[in-house]
Image (cartoon, rainbow over all chains, first blue to last red; front, side, top):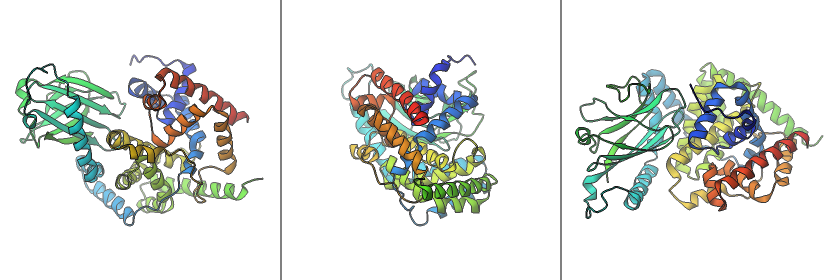
Length: 241
Length: 193
């Protein structure tokens, strides 16, 4: 793949930056890809993790809550007996279990949207927010890919913020899954950062409360695809604000 | 030599954890249980510090052990020390959570996560022999105050370059050049004293 080359003399600094988690966006993607593909660079990252590691000793241990192991054992037990999709669901639960957190995120989103929702049709007087703007928080399992989608059903404008998508060659593709369970592609989204999209009129009606948005990793070529080829890496329900 | 008992403890921990991780890599659930008993307080402390929320930290910690279960076979004891490897997974998972969920939640969380004051190192499960720790702290002290505190904020708070620049009220480019210069000095200092 024709990646912009990161000059070798920047590896050292980049390795330290990655160990600390400083880079974002494209730089982070490139650094993670380099880490996966180049053992020498990966070793530099580990070396920096080791250099910073004594700082961990400044964090006092705190006993894990009683019953914590049982939760893990239950999750593993579930994972061992289920197929991949169910494993994913099992893993997803940990993100979703923090109901307070989710509620807080939703509340913050609401406030955020109220103040920052940008649309070209600013002149339209006081739209009825309850019927216009839908939001979904999509969360995933292992590397914690997550997405926040904000959709204006009236204009079809959609903004998707992506975080921590696995840096595989495959690209994240967004699907809406309405009540009949058939996924419909909304197109590719960014691996990191924000993407502005437009939802065609026929699909806007699918973006209703309770419909699921999901992201699967797909070949970039040929998108939007007719159907997903793999299990979702993240999913979440649509809620209207 | 100073800190020989810490050193003995650290190397005993290292040998023990390396063995347990090898068992976890073979999908031995009892080994993961032993690992949890031995390391969960250490890792929970990290999750709690970075997330700043107890409920979240419990969920993060669960995910950390599921990741360890999945990734144990990738642990290479010739390259990384086991406790650093485990602590790094905990830190990265907590940072992922923070970036996905809590960035907008509250300033209190941010303060909790980035409290700059040193906690006293706890006696058990020390990552490093005391010499390595002393060397890092000595070398951090050699840096200018602002990049030093940016490094600490990044480590304990999971802040990106852009966030560090905003917090320090300097241009992004300034923050990057501070940090890159500091990394060079830090490495030279750690390796050559």
